[in-house]
Image (tube, rainbow, N blue to C red; front, side, top):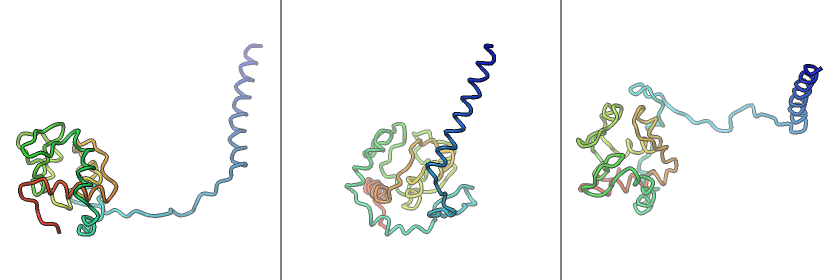
Length: 173
């Protein structure tokens, strides 16, 4: 008799769960679109084996969106790991004074990830733009745990702010 009660409870529970699912499908009919609303194009960078944003970003237009004072404000997200002061010490991340045109992984007194050292490129406006957009995909295997700056104005402003914090800021493109 107990087994019959247990079996009946299981069957009734299954009927209720399936029935609620079917009933909600009838009540809340949702037509799925046949096409994607918008497409994002990405290119395959064969040298890195990673997908990167179009390399033909108009840096002049991007940097025109930025503002150094906005960059200083946005950089507060970075201050928990990076120092921007001249002669500043490395924290969790390396000191960023004079980063422009510095080779990635170029500070001798900081232990970089192997991926960043192997990257071998200098930090230019274009490199910083790609890296700050999404560090984990721009240089795969780097140990920076930051998700990136998706907003163009924020990213451009931080790049301008980093360029300003140098003994020799490089000219804007």
